[in-house]
Amino acid sequence: MSSIQINVTDRDGVRTEGVEWKDFESLMECLTRNKFPILATCGGNASCSTCHSYLDQKTFVKTGGTNEEEEDLLEMLDDTRHDNSRLTCQVEWSEDLDGAEIEIAPEW
Ligand code: FES
Figure 1 (cartoon, protein in one colour):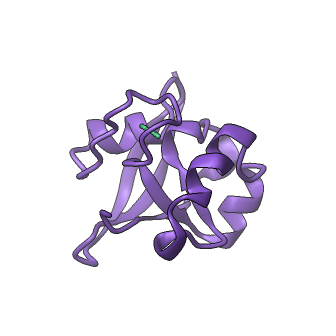
Figure 2: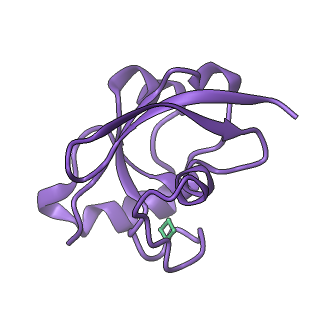
Protein backbone atom coordinates (compact mmCIF):
# COMPACT_ATOMS: atom_id res chain seq x y z
CA MET A 1 0.00 0.00 0.00
CA SER A 2 1.18 3.51 -0.77
CA SER A 3 0.08 6.77 0.70
CA ILE A 4 0.77 10.45 0.26
CA GLN A 5 0.34 13.44 2.54
CA ILE A 6 -1.92 16.39 1.89
CA ASN A 7 -2.87 19.55 3.77
CA VAL A 8 -6.48 20.26 4.57
CA THR A 9 -8.11 23.54 5.63
CA ASP A 10 -11.50 23.14 7.30
CA ARG A 11 -14.47 25.54 7.30
CA ASP A 12 -13.06 27.42 10.30
CA GLY A 13 -9.85 28.14 8.41
CA VAL A 14 -7.84 25.66 10.47
CA ARG A 15 -5.15 24.00 8.35
CA THR A 16 -3.98 20.48 9.14
CA GLU A 17 -0.70 19.38 7.60
CA GLY A 18 0.37 15.85 6.78
CA VAL A 19 -3.05 14.23 6.39
CA GLU A 20 -2.48 10.70 5.12
CA TRP A 21 -4.25 9.75 1.88
CA LYS A 22 -4.11 6.03 1.10
CA ASP A 23 -3.95 4.76 -2.46
CA PHE A 24 -7.25 2.86 -2.36
CA GLU A 25 -9.27 5.88 -1.22
CA SER A 26 -10.98 8.66 -3.14
CA LEU A 27 -10.18 12.08 -1.73
CA MET A 28 -13.63 12.10 -0.10
CA GLU A 29 -12.88 8.79 1.66
CA CYS A 30 -9.59 10.17 2.90
CA LEU A 31 -11.30 13.28 4.30
CA THR A 32 -14.08 11.36 6.04
CA ARG A 33 -11.67 8.80 7.51
CA ASN A 34 -9.67 11.70 8.93
CA LYS A 35 -12.87 13.11 10.49
CA PHE A 36 -13.22 16.22 8.40
CA PRO A 37 -16.82 17.50 8.28
CA ILE A 38 -17.76 16.02 4.91
CA LEU A 39 -21.19 14.42 4.92
CA ALA A 40 -20.87 12.50 1.64
CA THR A 41 -24.60 11.84 1.77
CA CYS A 42 -24.70 10.07 -1.58
CA GLY A 43 -21.82 7.80 -0.70
CA GLY A 44 -19.57 8.98 -3.50
CA ASN A 45 -21.89 8.93 -6.50
CA ALA A 46 -21.49 12.56 -7.58
CA SER A 47 -25.10 13.30 -6.72
CA CYS A 48 -25.16 15.24 -3.41
CA SER A 49 -22.28 17.76 -3.57
CA THR A 50 -21.69 17.63 0.21
CA CYS A 51 -18.10 16.58 -0.50
CA HIS A 52 -17.37 19.81 -2.42
CA SER A 53 -13.89 21.23 -1.82
CA TYR A 54 -11.35 23.52 -3.45
CA LEU A 55 -8.01 22.25 -4.70
CA ASP A 56 -4.94 24.40 -5.14
CA GLN A 57 -4.60 25.28 -8.81
CA LYS A 58 -1.66 22.95 -9.55
CA THR A 59 -3.44 20.02 -7.95
CA PHE A 60 -6.64 20.81 -9.80
CA VAL A 61 -4.79 20.60 -13.12
CA LYS A 62 -3.05 17.37 -12.09
CA THR A 63 -6.40 15.71 -11.36
CA GLY A 64 -7.50 16.44 -14.93
CA GLY A 65 -10.37 18.69 -13.81
CA THR A 66 -14.03 17.89 -13.43
CA ASN A 67 -15.89 15.06 -15.16
CA GLU A 68 -19.26 15.46 -16.85
CA GLU A 69 -21.46 14.17 -14.02
CA GLU A 70 -19.60 16.30 -11.52
CA GLU A 71 -19.88 19.36 -13.74
CA ASP A 72 -23.69 19.06 -13.85
CA LEU A 73 -23.86 19.15 -10.07
CA LEU A 74 -21.28 21.89 -9.57
CA GLU A 75 -23.17 24.10 -12.00
CA MET A 76 -26.06 24.19 -9.56
CA LEU A 77 -23.91 25.55 -6.73
CA ASP A 78 -23.49 29.07 -8.19
CA ASP A 79 -22.05 31.07 -5.29
CA THR A 80 -19.70 28.57 -3.76
CA ARG A 81 -18.46 27.11 -7.03
CA HIS A 82 -14.94 28.29 -7.90
CA ASP A 83 -12.65 27.51 -10.83
CA ASN A 84 -10.81 25.01 -8.65
CA SER A 85 -13.93 23.27 -7.28
CA ARG A 86 -14.09 19.47 -7.24
CA LEU A 87 -16.40 16.91 -5.75
CA THR A 88 -13.82 15.06 -3.71
CA CYS A 89 -15.55 11.72 -4.26
CA GLN A 90 -14.54 12.07 -7.90
CA VAL A 91 -10.86 12.77 -7.18
CA GLU A 92 -8.74 9.65 -7.47
CA TRP A 93 -5.53 9.03 -5.57
CA SER A 94 -2.29 9.62 -7.42
CA GLU A 95 1.27 9.83 -6.18
CA ASP A 96 1.51 13.16 -8.02
CA LEU A 97 -0.97 14.73 -5.60
CA ASP A 98 1.44 14.58 -2.68
CA GLY A 99 1.47 17.94 -0.90
CA ALA A 100 -1.92 19.01 -2.28
CA GLU A 101 -3.74 21.85 -0.53
CA ILE A 102 -7.43 21.08 -0.03
CA GLU A 103 -9.96 23.54 1.35
CA ILE A 104 -13.37 22.29 2.35
CA ALA A 105 -16.08 24.39 0.68
CA PRO A 106 -18.80 26.12 2.74
CA GLU A 107 -22.01 24.26 3.47
CA TRP A 108 -24.99 25.44 1.45
S1 FES B 1 -20.20 12.27 -1.86
FE1 FES B 1 -21.98 12.97 -2.83
S2 FES B 1 -21.23 14.15 -4.46
FE2 FES B 1 -19.43 13.41 -3.52
